[in-house]
Image 1 (cartoon, one colour):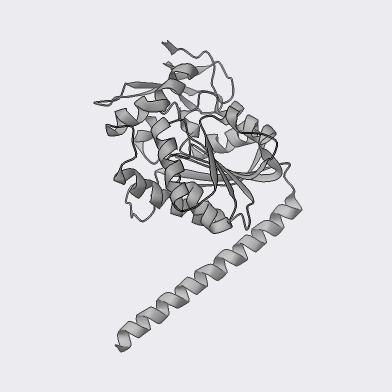
Image 2 (cartoon, rainbow, N blue to C red):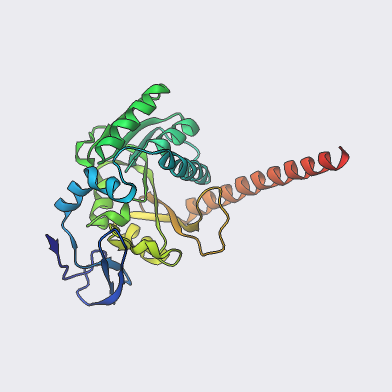
Length: 297
């Protein structure tokens, strides 16, 4: 039973126009409209939240890959993404003590961030078979972890200084409210949230079912702001380890809870530029050394 929206799920504006109908040979057609106020692109009509919750338990994986269990291709794709996101995080976050991953899937992002920061790991994964497989996999390498079915099950007694959402926000019926809940109930006062979503201007599959929001850099930035986050960066990015001629298919963003402090932010940017340039020069030096070694052999 689908529902028809009367207002934009991002800004609540009631004026919106037809945008696009994405047709797929297996998945349901996805009809999108665009908000005339904020430019948000959203599915309308769309499944109800209850229908989507039931869909993600098992039917989602069976529809997109033919079975509910993790496959080798899942580990390959998610492993590349997890490595890239863990590296990307180091540009902005030097330390992390407690990490919550929403949509933790096979657990590879939990594992990569645990390896980098030696932090406490907590996941949320609605897919039954993926959740159990990730528990078993992380237990086999002796990584302590708790993985829940829904965010409502995660205790709020101890907050997190890092929350990640990789390819989750585009699936949510109420993305602003979901982020607000994370910011207000789960995030430390100076904590960070990392978000990655499909880029509407990078890949047409940003509109494929069950995506119900298609983000641009501007609408992702505005969504984070509305939820009480100060966006630090919203960048386009590619799949790890691949070279593309097409526009970047992903948007990768990080935001911090709290008010914007121009002075402290400028110091952060200064330190980040120095660190990143220093790392770049080390890589360039190593490449030059290897080239010279090859020339002399």
